[in-house]
Image 1: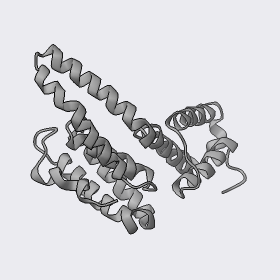
Image 2: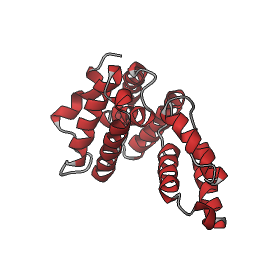
Image 3: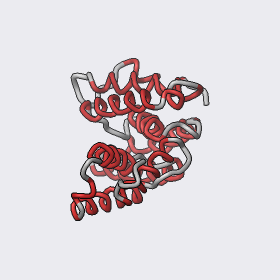
Image 4: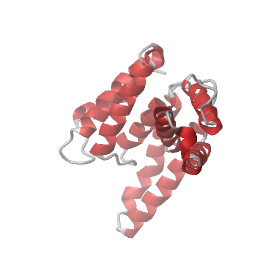
Length: 206
């Protein structure tokens, strides 16, 4: 890292490297704030960023990903509870009260499936493992274009960090996540789940 690099960019380039190596974490709020601060600093001091366009763009991209990361495991139960309440309200409003009753029971097995996901998966992969669990349960919609972008991003991450994505327990989750995202991305109807999607990650032992 050059000593001439603007201090905010140098700081976040260093911190993001630690995030990639699993040596530190950033919350969604921290990443969003950092991205805004970095963009503001470049706008105020464009001459200082001359020659560092690639580093600046890379930092913004990574901070954007982190600012959109899925809720971590500690927040999943509250997220699912909110979804259950919303689904129950919609069921009551539509007159399908009977359909609302099994929802609580289904959340029990859904929570168990979330619990089986091992800790330590790379953050972007962990995000999509949990999102696909919710997608298969019918409580999360994933548009084909969103799935396509996620598949590309995960493949790029795996190319940059093969040891993190293509070895050990993570390898199985990575392969199945890529397959499911690919199937969603190429589905003719948004939200359509083919037979292969019913299985996916639930067959992996933690």
